[in-house]
Image (cartoon, rainbow, N blue to C red; front, top):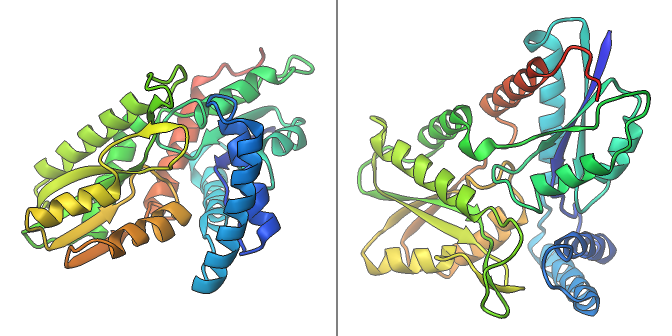
Length: 329
């Protein structure tokens, strides 16, 4: 029986208010972001210290705990059950792991831990491909030295253009969102750099085109769906404040514009994330609290929904089926 290791890779967030845990998470985040962005190491260290203190104070005051890592573990558990239960033939055994870019267990460690499997799949738990998500996994795969003619890890990505994911998102929106006419839906993505500190277009793969295409395609699909009750569907971005100019409009800017146009009822779906975390909960809700829109509701991310688990299982099965039977280099 062949053994396949499926490694679900999310960004990873601190699970407590601990300063050291948050400092480490931010330090790892800035370290791999610094591989493609101009972030001097002294700046990374200062930002990690300040961010660790800020998160410690904020998380403790609001009794907040990020659910992202827990959700990723649940996604892994669901996927293993589905793959070994019904999706793939019995001559293949799947071991599914959760791993993270910025928190333990780190993806590099899980790749080393599972090197004895016949095949390793690295599943990017981000719908948008860029140099820091699937690109990071591609580089990791390329650095692996195959032993005994074992294949290098295969990266599973390209979700942004997947019609199956689009259907999952559509059903998710109409299950959790409002069905009454007159409301507005905002599709939120993790923003990206559009210009660096010198005003120049970034030289690395930011994923901007993929994000724009996913947003436009999903927006049109929602508006054309017979279940739709939204008057408008807008796209906005959850941005950071380092490295230069980020995507527009930000969520705060979008909500301000909607308020000025008389919108009173807004749903927000963070379709640019596969799991809820600090950005989609804490930061997004801070933007909403500062808005004058009368009613704002946050739809959950796909998280550990049954439909998303089924989609992931079908995606993994399709990738495995497309590979040569011997899985050699």
